Amino acid sequence: MIDPVNEPVTYEGGCHCGAVRFRVIVYQHKVEDCNCSICRKKGFLHLIVPPEQFTLLSGEDALTTYTFNTGVAKHLFCRICGIHPFYRPRSHPNMVDVNLRCLDENVLDQFHITPFDGQNWEDNINQLSPEQDI
Image 1 (cartoon, rainbow, N blue to C red):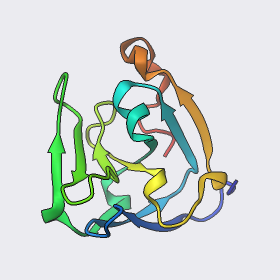
Image 2: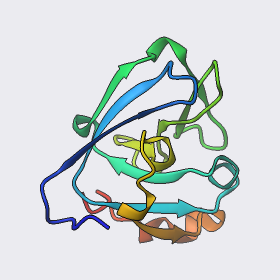
Image 3: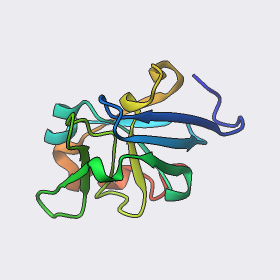
Image 4: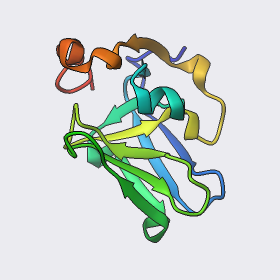
């Protein structure tokens, strides 16, 4: 795992077909593995960053939005291949939540992965820090 006190690391990633491409700057190599219905089915590992650490390089026109329940979260996915590389989360609506699995390289072993009980979201949301330890 990368030491979180080191300099920031820049990663690139995207969807499966390559229509959507992004760059993310990571200061803290920590992610959540949520067990809610949508995250479990997508296999989403949550890397939440402020918008200034995220750049959409291409594919804005390929993105489609899905919302449900409260409608706060904006689940973005590629309309061509269906992959969900990032979205605006309900827990941090002013941030960008990148799917760690959508980075170009297999970097799972460089991150500390913490389980989050999203099935009981209302009871557990206070476990997430307001700024996700950024």
